[in-house]
Image 1: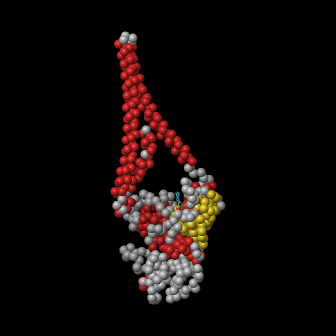
Image 2: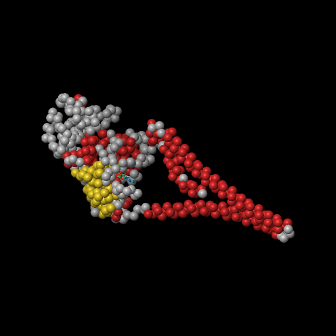
Image 3: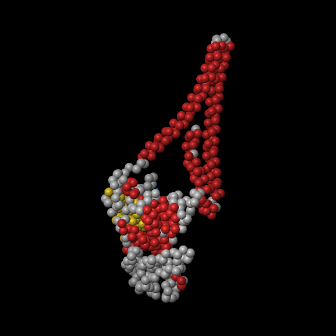
Length: 507
Ligand SMILES: Nc1ncnc2c1ncn2[C@@H]1O[C@H](COP(=O)(O)OP(=O)(O)O)[C@@H](O)[C@H]1O
Ligand SMILES: [Mg+2]
């Protein structure tokens, strides 16, 4: 009974444990306070606690009832035995010596029986537990990874051929008939709306998941045939939610697998912008990044993301996958990462997942996913120039509903407000540190006012090829000087001279 109750209540007990953790966890304390959630969580905790207590009480009462019934039955039985013994002795049918022997025999048997019953109950309960344990081990065995043992060198080409993937217990496939490939030296960008399958696809490419139909191959060898450990040694991943390991800064970057010494760590940290973070730490690379321990420090979200990027850059892997790698970075750090990406891709294949479409311009090819299917592929210029989801998202990303016309948003030298229906661009001309030019999102159907010159990125115009591959000139940002405040001293970006408007296309 107790065992059954504890099994039935295990989910509730786990919820209680989680709630206890959430209520005392420092990382969410501010959300808990600012959301005034304490009362809500406490009420829920009390309600679940009351259910668990009630179930435990019920089990205890039932157990006690059975125990009382058992004790009554046992008492009645032993009363009968003692009464019979007394009767036999009183009636002279039993000698005193026999009665004395019977008395001691009954006492001995009684205590042995009690011990046997107690041990039996304990064994029964342990047996139930062992049955469950055996069932669990059997089921867990079914989840064991069954992969091949082929060596996995750095891949020259990673290819998905009409792959499909369906999560267990999910009706709809997360990916359906997706075919893509990325080669060493290339940057492939995956773009799409939330839930379109970008993260799932990146996990298939890195062999973290195996496709449910067809295969992902590394140099024509299926990922399921490769030794998983060898395969993962060739992958560097910046996941959407990266771990905050309670280790030193050095170990957080090397993941406990150092190579190349501190020089390699420093190089990776410089590329990701983590060096600035490390330089500000009391013990540099030896600083413990966990405030829960004495001497440990706390990093901000963006600083942690720089560390996560350095972790991936430090890994000598043939495939680098970055899932929203700069979501928490400031403009300067983000610029540094994307400006350095091309050099990083020289000796590895890079898969980039990001919602900031301006960043995917660095990619050689962009794959647009929608509900698990590839719906568009091409370069940044091709996708911006052709109608489709990419251009729509691009337009939306550049339209923040800013009212057109204010003088501060107008290119210098132009006068008069823009037309009221002009939906874009909110960042025209570029804000102080934007590496320009503004993202002109205008699909061809947007009117191009004759007095406004067209920015260079008007769809259809071939992007200027800069050293970074970005379709706009990237200036070298001056390093931040400590104590000098924002980089106001750095030269303002220089936009290209705007050209004349292209004739508007219909549609
Ligand atoms: N662990 C999971 N279990 C079940 N379904 C999942 C899981 N992870 C993602 N999905 C589903 O798979 C689809 C694609 O998810 P995901 O690849 O994370 O999309 P994206 O990264 O493009 O936002 C979504 O519909 C999502 O609900
Ligand atoms: Mg995702």
